[in-house]
Length: 165
Image (cartoon, rainbow, N blue to C red; front, side, top):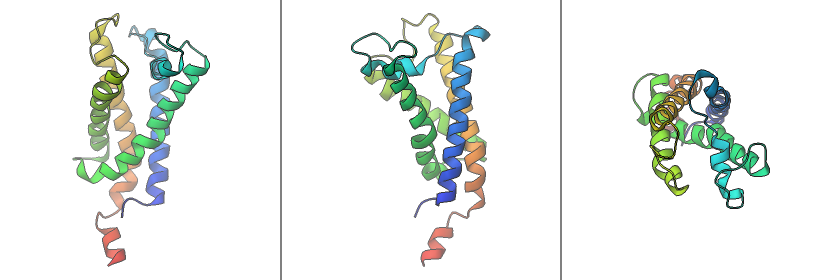
């Protein structure tokens, strides 16, 4: 038996907070001299009718944002709470490990399916895009692990086995 409802609710809250912070930082990136990062446009591309990216504030852009929020707030935290005991270290460190996994998965699987990759030559600043993406995922993981992991750490790993024995 996996984590309980309380753990899942806490993980969804953590995922939502982490996703919201990451979204704000993506929109503020140009202010800090970092490349513009608009994952909603990239994820909305399949819904944009063949355009290179989904234009800002269009229906396809909102679809991309919805996918981003759904993955960051529900799907990733759900998988994280099930993988939690297989990760090492404190809750935040486990979250950072999870963020690294999500970054690699996103770069290898999702970006490749979208016809892109980790270090695209068409990015204005390929290394800055690479580094800021990694930093964002690690921050997401640290927040997710710090909030969700606190509740998971308190539950003994074999608690569910004892209850059903």
